[in-house]
Amino acid sequence: MKTVYSADHSLRNAKTELYGGQLVTPFECPERMEYVLKRVGETGLGEVIPPGKFGMKHILRIHDPGFVEFLEHCWEEWQEVGYEGEAIPTIIPARGMQQRIPEHIEGRLGYYSLAMETSISAGTWEAALASAHVALTAQNMVRDGLSSSFALCRSPGHHAAADMFGGYCFFNNAAICAQAFLDQGADRIAILDVDFHHGNGSQTIFYDRQDVMYLSLHGDPRHAFPHFLGYGDERGEGPGEGFNYNYPMPPGTSYPVWAEALDDACAKIAHYAPDALVVSLGVDTYERDPISFFKLRSEDFTDYGNRLAKLGLPTLFIMEGGYAVEEIGINTVNVLAGFEGV
Image (tube, rainbow, N blue to C red; front, side):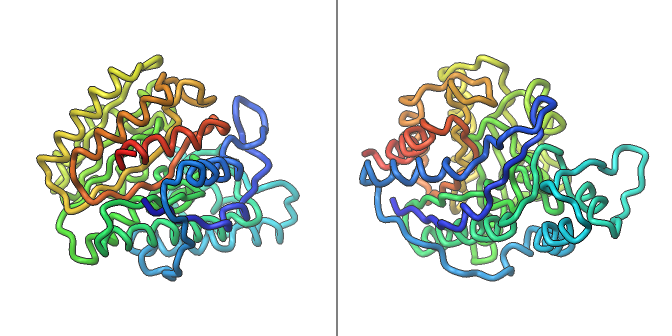
């Protein structure tokens, strides 16, 4: 399996995250990618190649132009105002407030955020753009006939909505690639999200559409971020009704329970018969991940990679979460090796 990777991810090296009432070093850090890349090499998974350049066309098929412009210039404007720390939202348009876009960067930062933990810092725009190009390069490889590919993306993407960032995500790489497949002639695409956290952005983007089926296995939002989306009764709306499936699971969920949900999701994907499968590959379901509560072990990732392979679909893996940094490489490559039958 070929891996697409860009060292530009390291241009984003934020120093602050709001967590538990404190400003802490972000769990989403550059070292994550280095552990995965090292493991890819150690196991001989396959060739590692750099991304191509795609401009903004595919990104703008998913993301609002005003939001994209905000991301591009946020850090520069934040500094021009005279703020010395990293850009963290302090006010959002909550219930009962106007949904107008302010001129001041503090207001726009809040308008375009979905959560307040993720800071914008130097290099964020460049890293997010490179991440989208990594994903699109891997997507093109599958479109052109490869049975599978792995986009080693950072920043992750599945929390990013059409016009909101948060949860460490800025551009929704999975959504961008799903739309690219469709624009290039596919009729149906499935997105399977196995990250511990619900991909609220991916769900929202395709919620009223039937050409993309979204399925997510995740921590019950009553107990886990993003809290306000990801419940089992969210099934889509309008033409998209019946094409959205959520599998929220409680604290302490073990692999047999999780795998049962995966098998059900795979059966739905098989019935849908998509032209390609996009896997939002988060490995924060691991038992020692610091910000999750599932109990998957490293060997379980190999097993579910094998289960995904049985679908027999052209498959694009896109890196999402996973914050047990020293084990992220092992767990990620276990999924890919299991899929490849290595």
